Length: 416
Ligand SMILES: Nc1ncnc2c1ncn2[C@@H]1O[C@H](COP(=O)(O)OP(=O)(O)O)[C@@H](O)[C@H]1O
Ligand SMILES: CC(=O)OP(=O)(O)O
Ligand SMILES: [Mg+2]
Image 1 (tube, rainbow, N blue to C red):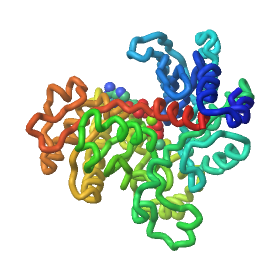
Image 2: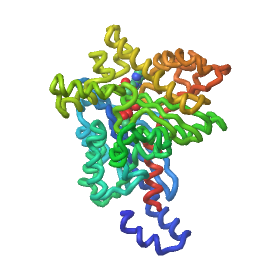
Image 3: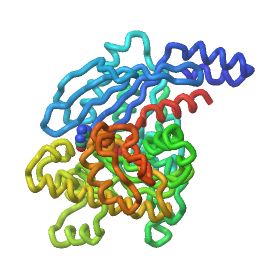
Image 4: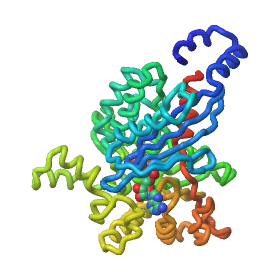
């Protein structure tokens, strides 16, 4: 729809253009899809010519054998819909979601869809309108994000099948980190490999962009200082922000580097792979499965990838996995602080960061050397500020909102 009017818009003056755009988009919606490694999240926004307001948002949990929750809430967080389903793959989740949207969203047909795409590689540093050529290039990056990229592409394809005329925009997790210095973006490998794109991209960029955007509301001038953001979800990473820009992050070439995660191993001596290939004849597919799907909290505990299950368990395996997670967050957070040469604020976000007060307590107990003092009752209540008034470094819990950042980028791109 937007495609067809675009050339007309270019020929008319600015005031008329704004009126025209307002008319075609009034009461129209932007659909956002966010394929995470353990969930499919979505949100619908009402849009006028340049602003957005959320109508509803939802999440379908995608989990092994347990039943998955499909929940939709309105913009104030009131529950609109809840269903228990058995969903083991993103493709089922997309089907369920699109059917739900079809039957529940009356005349608010989306005029554009925005997607979180985890890997943009060297080619995509900013949001892009999706066409056949873009899809071909994104497909080439599937091996670099095996738990995400193909699921985002499945959402894009499903919408193309259902609504071939619907413009779709890809927003990348990697773009935000392009402000990192060269030293942070390269590995100590021969230059020709770096030139081929074997470099550190970093991920969760849409989440960090959102946090950087709202931080001044909570920290005032301090927000431009030295901030560490801990995005602890099923996928987990840390980011060092200075002046609201990324200067370092724990994930690298793929979302496997850095912290241990739900099913991902995080940092590993690369010689472990060489050893397993040679001594245990593990091939590429076996290793991919091991490192992305069988390792992390699941591998260490032997019980679950889900922090909720581990925290509720008395099993020594669960304790070991949680201990390792806390240890590695502290270890890698130290590196972020060293690169920032200090710390003016610490932010927890994403599934574990926003909800697991026990994990925050344990991490902060090791950060007294950074003059961090937790207010335990605020922490238990998942309050926004969880540090004491005396704590030299403020500690915040800020729910992330990748969907809103995607919706804004999407509107900006089609409006341009
Ligand atoms: N109340 C809670 N306590 C502990 N962990 C939680 C809680 N709620 C969610 N989580 C953790 O957060 C994870 C999901 O985080 P999320 O950021 O939504 O993941 P993703 O975007 O990768 O799908 C779950 O797997 C679970 O481990
Ligand atoms: C990049 C990544 O790990 O994303 P998620 O946390 O959504 O799985
Ligand atoms: Mg996520």
